[in-house]
Image 1: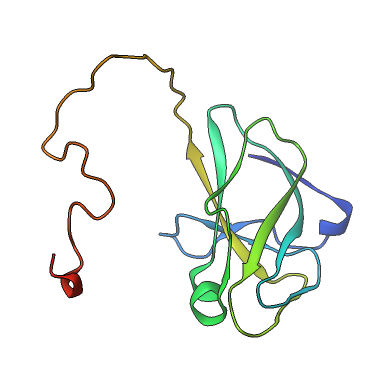
Image 2: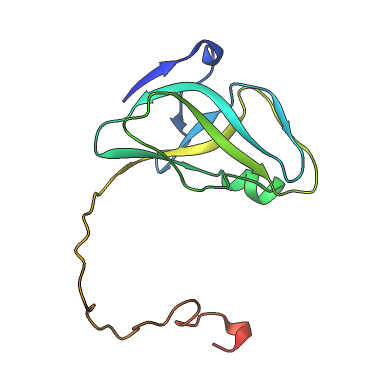
Length: 148
């Protein structure tokens, strides 16, 4: 996949899979920023991509940052469309109780290249019946503490 390294991204590692079984590539910050508790920031990566038609890049949180510090991607997974050519910025939020410092070069998110299916709608008068029917939130059970 084609990637353009912007001026402020020079010298940083390109996204890379941390292990042979990793689904996502780690992407790093191109800036220093401190996220106060409850704050959000679009973290610069210094990268722009030419994503192939029929694909998207999904931006996902890093599990270690989420568990240890409460740092997440509020619109997870974020979507980078194939026709976007601007800089990839990762929206991060601090759900933790302490300020969180991000230093240039820190891994801040994971990128997953994924195929995109496009749909068209066909309006109908009735939908086919299923065993679940119109059962919505919580209708399939699964929370032992609630007795279901």
